[in-house]
Length: 426
Image (cartoon, rainbow, N blue to C red):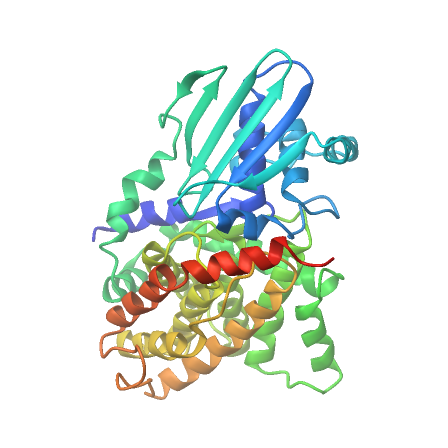
């Protein structure tokens, strides 16, 4: 694969995002629809796929202390800036939040499960007395595939994310060998997005360590290191920095992060463990940038087969990328990096996704711990054998098996989890 293709994939999949990408994508659709209607909003209706509802139901909305699909749709329509894509809610004010809450209380914003086979599907209908506008997003969180106004189709794909579409086939050509070769040879000047991911996601992690967000998973690890209950080692440092970023993001922090493959948590989990390892190992800036680039590309490689949304936790994928990055910092080459993949997927596969929420930080911590352990074993030449379970001799085939589990074996699990989430006794 040529260098420019790698760079194009990076530009497509590393995107700055403010807030969890599922509710933010709903806000984006609502904000876009609002630009096509005039007059006071009478009603907002959201129809979304199970994966979107699962991830948008309970996560904190940036700049607020609130949650809810109906609320974020109203907020997007009232104050969202569609031009800012996944930073659509960057400019909201307290009055906007109050107006959105009022709409929800009046029953003017509602949501329901869409009748669709797509894993990522968002349809938002904004109605006023004078007109209505419908916006549909599919496959990618910013991929607007339909705009309909008063029964007329204004755009049926022309406004879609062209970068996503043009590079989708190219991603099928990604291989671990090719990724390692690219990471070792690319000029650092070409990796500005990777550098930005390090800056943004590390900053989000430090914010989570310094302030009380969500479950305070990262902060609690740091506090127990200070007490001497936990060791001040690479694993604890990596778990704390990664989990703290997730703590902040899931609780509605207004600090943007660099998302990977449509997920901020995946971006954090692919970046911060490698940053923490570099700090503990005394790596150079160049080693850090190349290691994080490797982590991002391995994550993108697996996610391109795994899909945007799944019944399995996406942090298992980004944790695998992070393990490769840590292995690289430990001096590992292609053999050791592939061993890290075998070790990770033989360990964390099966972790269920029950939506985006504060508890995600614990899953980030768990996968980060596994990432360090897998890297240490791989660096010693240890790899889970192909005699074990679904692990193949070839790491690429192991990845294919892992993705088959995520895509083929979990649809009923996804339905069951969503049913539990929607019918809990609160």
